[in-house]
Length: 178
Image (cartoon, rainbow, N blue to C red; front, side, top):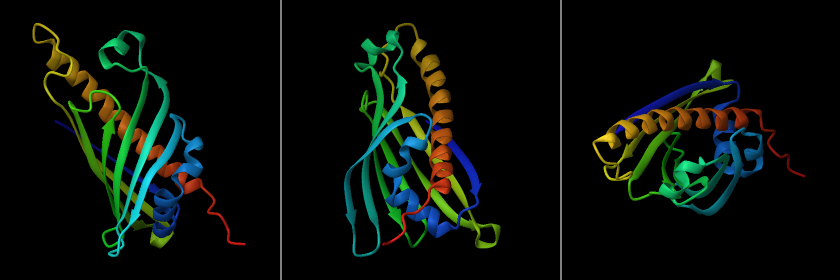
């Protein structure tokens, strides 16, 4: 199991940034370098203020040709299950990859705190990635070495993408009524 974290401070009030990231993600997804498309698959608003959202993410990078037979896919995509809790200003999330989902567990939390005297937001990302044994089925004890390498890459990419999402959200112009 490998942990990861990232922190970014953005010049956008917390409530604005919170609302944009929760409610307008599909509208600014094209501004995020690695993202090809984000589709909302489901949304539930509960009595206690919790908002549960399910999104499908597709990224621009293709799976390297030599890995396609092993992963049984040629594209990187995943389902994101997230719960937005306004009482704690946190979003708890889990990622379900489109490949090897029985071997990969990834979850975390994004928290939003006021910064810059209320003119900005401190966004903290923390998460855990777990690659379960047997996902590669490599002989001679090579799997732990390859798993460690993959964990290092993924735990760098996820925080970078989350940071890019927050930065794109901070630059997004909220629609005006009327």
